[in-house]
Length: 65
Image (cartoon, rainbow, N blue to C red):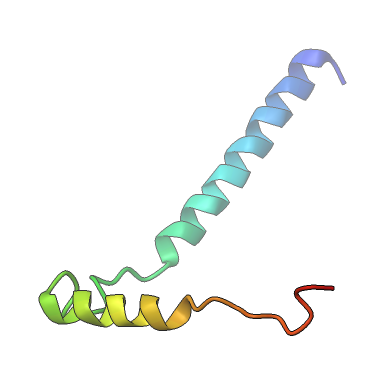
């Protein structure tokens, strides 16, 4: 196999791989924002409450050891 033929085969292989990825990406469903209240005051309050509840300091019983 000469180098020109090998180069062409490599180009075809890359093209086939890219086409496969495009087909996979195109097959995925797309949705709008899943939250009907996104960006609204209700959503902002809920996110703030969740953030406050999620990030609590941890106190270890053996912190001085």
